[in-house]
Length: 474
Image (cartoon, rainbow, N blue to C red):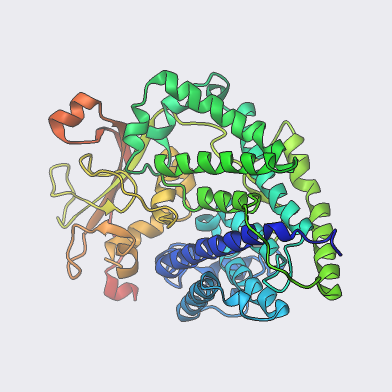
């Protein structure tokens, strides 16, 4: 069955699998360390409340059968353990069928988390990890050479990720067509990184070059993935370089990294493939049947891509097997941030002792330089960016955040960089204000040491307190 396998891609498979396992590890680690405050039993959007109103068939998850914070924690840490085992190469030490089961486990574990994660897990990189992770089940291990059809479908995913993102930009904000979007993007992106200030201050002609190069990489280069080698390798390598440029310019969870992982599967490394036996019949049949099914399901994202009403980041089935992707179809020109403050005063006044809560990733103190967190994902910080765009984005969870800050909830405070109140003395009132943020100029940076300049815009939420003392509420 020489037509079924591509032995020359054995190292590409190995690199792809180990890198994918690393992404899985970050995803499970993010879940394990943040879930209690976000979707736990006393979280802002509790899982028990969600599964009570959403049927299993719409969001398949083990947590429909049982939920407790302890069970969710064990589930997430189990995902970390399996991911670590895959990084270490355990799948290469077991029979083919066992390796497939081993790769199926993190996919099933993470599917259960994503399907109850609600707005905290509503972004494209979640579905992308699941779609790629499902295909990884059928790549095989050292017993067989990589199947051609699986390698093709991995390129097909990469094509849809890049080409779909390119189309959504060309069809969306006019600044992409005018080559001016990067005049704003580095400053207004959801979570800037430590180099974003410098990227923002690059010369405007260079920003035009960046945008034009992005269009080429997303609208032209993806087609070359399906050409003979070494052209396909060159195309994938160019995508990797582009994604690394994006990694340097901001924090985008593991979106850039899993795109790099996908591109690695299309790179043919110059190495001699080890001799392996032909694939078992049961394996070949299973791979062909599954891949045929995925090709049929691809009808939905293809139809979306060619549609003038193209949408971004949507899953077309509850198992997230085939999805559509895209990012930044529109770019904000102005950055707003919600600043949350508390006071211990019995009567909240404008001149009260208001103390600001500091978040880990989102801009706050103008003097605090952005940090690098990706591929680790700060879910609360990311959603706070959406809250600043419109209160409607935060309608389901912002009240819960305020309530937990008024209680000095330990799990919620762990999501923050610093609370201005001691553990045994929670604030009496919380308020939120909307501020306009912009990067400082070179001169302002030298004079003040601040990378941000902020100015008050309006009240986001008036001073608010708990309806009853904590002891009565519990």
